[in-house]
Image (tube, rainbow, N blue to C red; front, side, top):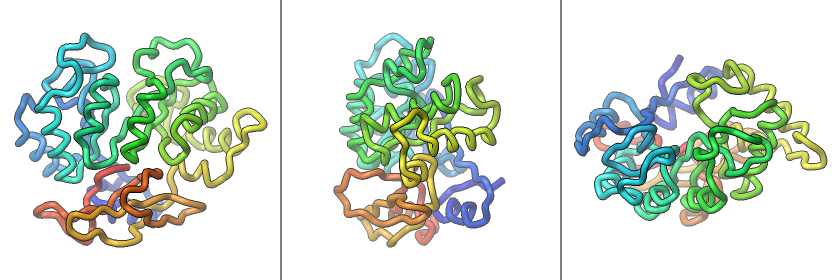
Length: 280
């Protein structure tokens, strides 16, 4: 099993047909207002950091807890800036709408919301997870950064899962929707990642006629082969998009279409040719 620290690591794993792990942290409670702990985590290989989880911290408010900060704290803003500088993906799953809206204003990179569903999802139906679902405006705020929203696996069938994905696509577009996390730690539709082929099949069938998606839409959601079209210069960002099959192309900076990866100027101590991960 490979560990991916750079875009080049992901490309190598894809080319070899091997799985790769992007190391993440769910909830940055351990920082305790010490940014040096974030930098140490990065040195140890963490490339995705979720700001909040199920316990209060010094960064911002979370969806299922009492509001104590009225959104993102000044320290939380510093955390986002540090992640942007290091090339770490900022995950705003579990964060309140106010926290996310303020994070959008601070971040210079696309944001990830790794696991959720659309609020009032008909595909998901009655669920105790309503507070963890997000409204259309919440979703659009993520999409406006060029980011991605992962749809979790808490559905009754692969067909319902496909419908849940399409519900979010109808709000923000296919370029901003991806497969959610929490698969390994939470009971849901699929007992292992192997079962996701059933979801692919359901998406290719269209879930429920007549909304049959093109194959390129399925490839976009599940991800095809990412490759840099160009290396970004200092202070520049090259946007990569997944298109038909396994092709990718660079889009001009300022475009708001589906950002899945960035190639960034290297941080100190990194291999510039590889490019750090800064969004998925």
